[in-house]
Image 1 (cartoon, rainbow, N blue to C red):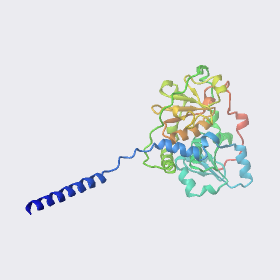
Image 2 (tube, helix red, strand yellow):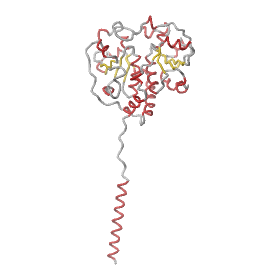
Image 3 (cartoon, rainbow, N blue to C red):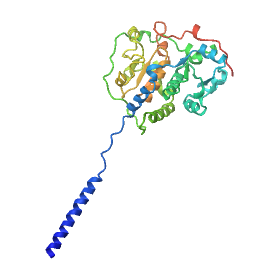
Length: 329
């Protein structure tokens, strides 16, 4: 009898041990999930949501068209991002002073999506290009940049462009081509968000907080040491072949900043300087690349400030571009 009881006890013990072992195996935590590539998710989301940089950028309005719209009573709001003292000295009638870093908040708080157009005005069209690029990427398709900024509105506000065209770098341009990097990785973003829309919202807030100063560079700083930068010539190939900054690499507008083309050839370990004719288009592009996490900078005033007389492309022609539209204090 005792032997029978002992055997029975051993069977019970074995069963319990087996059950306990299975229970432990069943409760093992799942293997950790790899974190998402936020920059990849964001780039895919932006390309699927209109792909503004590769389709419609830059979004600008000429001073003559804006003036005609205002005279007609069109449903337009003008946001002037210049310093308050300059705004108070003379601005477009009806314009609202809003610092560039506050434009997104102002737009949303004042339901500006109901407007036919929201025009961003600055000194030269470059800060406004950066702001417009960010707002367009968020999906606010009624936003445009005042081309040439307030420099085109009235002689009294034309100084920023009049004083920044020049030929001081004309002798430094070369025709020797440079090659794009090999394909690499996108920048690393750490917003902690998972969807394209959530990542976009977090990144737009961060880039607005940085300000346009973080996204701009002048040619004097650039030429201090060209090798410190990956320089992007954002022109068609035929104009690149005319001449370009030494070491600059040609990227075709509306084509090469896609995931499926050359976006991933941009480096993540050094600043990327984009230049165009005027600095207005490159400001739009810099906004896009900074959203993705690149240390992208727009070259102020573009080649207008470096080789004005000989350059191809768009020039600031004072006789044609400076109007005499009214300013109000």
